[in-house]
Length: 118
Image (cartoon, rainbow, N blue to C red; front, top):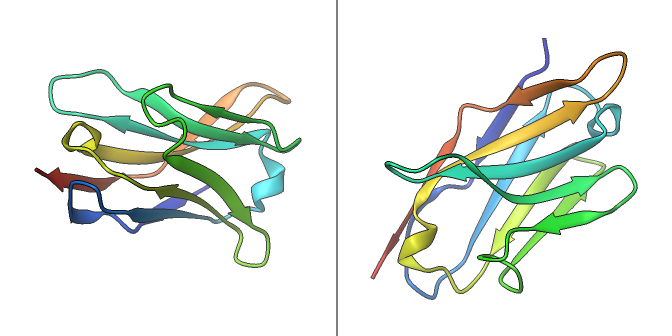
């Protein structure tokens, strides 16, 4: 069973920065893509950023220009650097990894809380 463990969440003031990391129990290249989702209170979980094995990236419009997703092959981690944080970035952030073959499957971490104070 694949395990994803997030770290790096916490309390930060508006305008500050945080770096979230996701450590995987399997090679990050065994997945077609890895990414970060977030869920704010009372809202649906939404994609924040994703990174494919082919280095394609997708960012939510709300974080574009403020966030960067990257991988560290040596550490087998995927990270999300978030800058110029806003109170509306407050949410639980989840690491996600998915495979498409032999069948589609998604793996999720337990989440890390990011709180941005105004």
